Length: 242
Image (cartoon, rainbow, N blue to C red):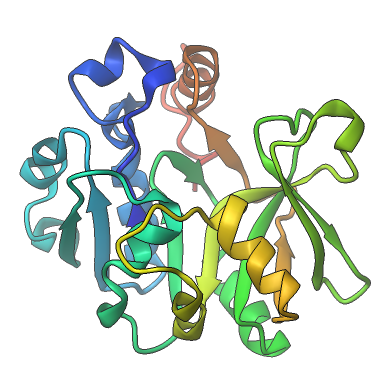
C-alpha cells in the first residue's frame, strides 16, 4: 500500500497543480520511485490511496501495466489519515504487506525488512532511519532485540529520547487493521502505534544501515537538497538511489 493522499501544503505553489507525491525529483514523480522500488523487490500488486488532485496520479499510472504491476486506487473524499486510508481497503490484504509513504524516497532493502519482520514474529515492523533533527518526525525507543518500547510523534526538544525516526515504510500483518476504526481519520504515528504498544503487541524496528537512504521532500529546502543529491550538476546521480 502506497499512501499518496497528502496535499503537501508546505510545498505550495508546486502542489497547487500536482499532489505532493507527484512532485518531480530528478526527472520523475516521487511516487514513481516507490512504485519502481516495490516492483523491483517482487511486489506485483499495489494499492494507492488518493485525495488531493487524484486524477493526476491515475492519469500517470493507469492500471500499472506500464510499470509491471497491478494498481488499485482508493479515492477518499476527505483524507482518512495514514492508517485510516489503509483500513478502507483492508479486504485487499490477506497476508503480510508493505506500507510506503508515497511522498518519501528511500533505497531501503525491503527484503531485509521483511526477513526481520518474519524472524521476530512481529505484527508490525517499522523501518527506522537515524536522523539529527527529529522534531518533525516520530521517534522510537528499542530494547536489545529491536522491539519497540516507546513511540512519540513530533517531540519537543526536551522530549527527545532517540534519534531513530519512523521512516514511513512498514511491514504489517492484517490483524493490526482490526484496531483501526472504519471510515474515520486515524494516523499510524499518533493513534495506531501507541495503541498497539499499549496492548502489548510485538512491534519491531528495522534500523536502516548507512547504505540505505531516506530522502524527505516536506519543504522546498528538503526538495532542493534531494534534487541536488539525485541529479547533481555534473550529471545524473541515481547511483546513490540504486
